[in-house]
Image 1 (tube, helix red, strand yellow):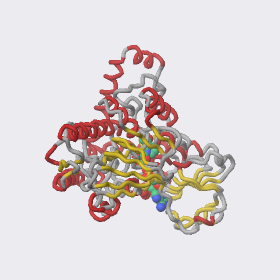
Image 2: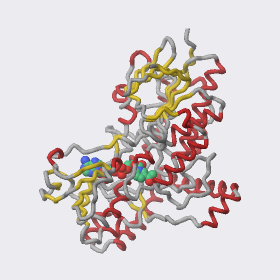
Image 3: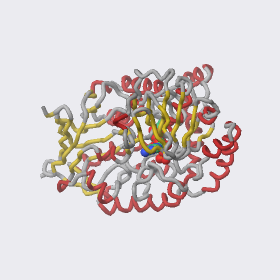
Length: 489
Ligand code: N01
């Protein structure tokens, strides 16, 4: 069956819901949102690992037009953020627009009709003038292809696909990876497991987390005086925004923070040899800076072991490190992150002249215009697309600018009587040259580490290089000459 709509939105995380709300605000009711799962929520629905929470303050990690005075903590847990998204979706009656259980597999552009045909796993087809991808960058688990993996006789799962049926009490648990997720769940499962072995490839920089319950008086104050909450949020925005200064060339500022964390590690961890293993040898900020009050202290436990020689192979009964020592395990948990660029490539998208988006990205590099459009793919939009992720502030800010930009784009199409617009190659080139110039001065390439922020050529394809208000500035209006506006015959 073919369903026809003006705008097809894929996904119901912050991006997809934010897009739907923006269209509604603009009086555009002709849209459908498709969602592969049975509920809204994106990453906050899917990630249920113990201790899963946001490392951006709740009062910033929410829509500016849907402030929540009732956040219970400074940094909220996944359940509370998921509840917030469900509540926002219900308030905006988005349920009537969402088709659940529909997984998009690909899309093709018809350059005569100027319409996208979108294919789904279940066989339904959607016909749309515009397609908005709100699928997020971090949801395809990266599971290392280690020799012997299939022979393992215990349970194994990835942090984003936590198997809650596996009781860790009394078990020997091996965790591979020490990134943002592992730093959150390892201190909690250390209390359950009989023995926890953590395989670290690169140590993260972990700051103390200034988390606390938000007192009832503050919540009730924000409920009764909404402008006070807005002022608080604005202040938080500028505090977070100031971090961009250190990341973008003022690298010496970070040296000071490194000294503080180094002292913190040495105080928290008893064994000097272990302290040395836990202190990174690259610049802070090169990888995402993590926060936890429990992570370093956990290594003082007799039942927690840190292995920093890497993983060589998996055996039926455990994990072998690069020194050839086998560490017995009943359960292996991968805290090994996600395939990043593939998140856009896994959708089989064919644009003008039969060009495949994945192939274009593979051959020419992952380049877009404003992280939103890609040359050769008219009326296709990404939210949180390449180079619009953040290491220092809330991505919800970026999502809001993108939703407004896409809505303005549709208005501009209508105003011109056009049916499609394709970003001009020169405009896309200029955008990428400008941000790459800025990024080479930044901590991500100068900091002496590798990370998922960088592609195989060492180019940063994920992060927005600087203040987010500059992104607001760049997306505040449509630069019409940057696009080729056309009308179907
Ligand atoms: O993944 P990661 P994550 N053998 O990529 C290691 C967001 N997030 O799921 O550093 C051995 O951070 C890898 O080692 P190395 C946030 O944006 C947000 O934890 O590459 N080890 C690293 O230690 C975050 O950045 C929140 O040397 C291997 C780890 O696995 C992103 O999600 C909370 C390996 C992966 O760390 C991803 O976080 C949680 C291998 N073959 C997550 N492959 C918030 O609070 C990888 N590693 C908002």
